[in-house]
Image (cartoon, rainbow, N blue to C red; front, side):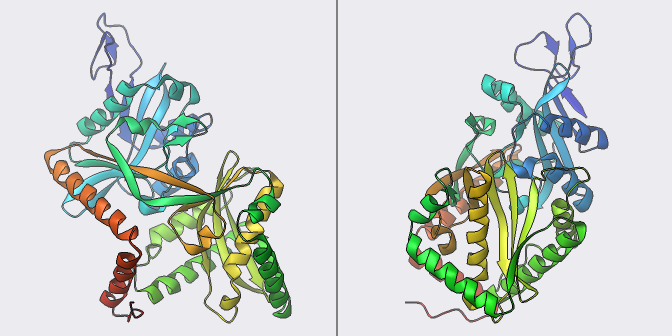
Amino acid sequence: MIDAAFSGESETAGSGRPAGGMPAFPRIVVSAASTEALLAYRNLCREALHAPAQSAHWVQNWVEQLQSDSLIASVCEQGRPVFALALEIARAGPFRIARFMGGSHANGNFPAASPAWLASGDRSAVQALAEAIAAARPDIDALVLERSVTDLDGHANPLLFLPHAQSPNIALSVDLRNGFDAVLGQSSARRKRKKHRSQTRKFEAAGGFRRIVAQSASDTRRLMDAFLDMKAKRFRAMGVADVFADDGIRNFFHALFTRPPGADAPIFTLEGLEVGGKLRAVTGTSRFGRRLICEFGGIYDDELAASSPGEFLFYENIQQACETGYDIYDFGVGDEPYKRLWCDIETRHVDIVMPLSGKGRLYTAGLKAAARLKAAIKNSPIAWRLAKSLRKRLAGKPGKPMS
């Protein structure tokens, strides 16, 4: 563990002691994600602002299930963390990077920080924290904190004090504050209601339907197993790698969505649409304050797929969110037609990319160039269609003819 003092105080860097020799609380602490460090992080999260993927529940389960090289870096005041980064160290070819726990599964990121500390806007503390990570772990080449939100509940993301650029993907959400009728009225309300009634009739004729919210461990197991099966089949059909294939990742999501003992309002929940006694669609949702976030969704490509069970479940989920009093339903990162059916808010996330070594400067330069290329491709319908077709061809699956 490294303790370090900074920002002009009369302390000796690395010792945590003032010049006179009296003990002082360290301002920066970087340590492995030990039991003690995780407990301190959990205590911070009780009062801190943070995104769901930086919650203590997410971090604890990632450490336990993945057993990856992990650290927690904290800014402390009066001996208590007021700002912390929970990071895993991952290989990227010949490079080693520090990233949010969860990798590509972590989206809409915002680090754990107390509101009072956020209000101070302590740029020097954030920069010193990055320097302390480099000092504690000289084997890390770069700090790569992708898909971060620029603000949360009116507080600017403190990571914006570090080098950053826009993420190539946008995030889409819908404002719920004026009620479900207003949400429908934003885009084709009459068509949405008519289609929902038609779907209802079809699902009733297929044996009846019900929307399920997982409450028990057995509910969670059933819905998560179904979702993972849906995605495996979907990715195989698309000719892309299954990002849920690793056993550690699967175990993580099972643990993440299992309600912790005594939790009245869990951060993560699973919803499912059952038709004729079979699950047809599943969504995974997280919540922060008055915002609901769709972490993922999936459907079975079966005899009812043409009736759009996923779209039906989103209709039910959004209607329920309005009735419960949420302000925002967030579809997360990615621009897809089914999201555009609902959304009226576009958000640009940022990627914090900071080299920590000479090798890291090479890596971050390449990463930034790749991000610019990715953004250019995704902003061109023709180039994006070509890229998807090429991806299928490289996977040995024929792509659709291109115009």
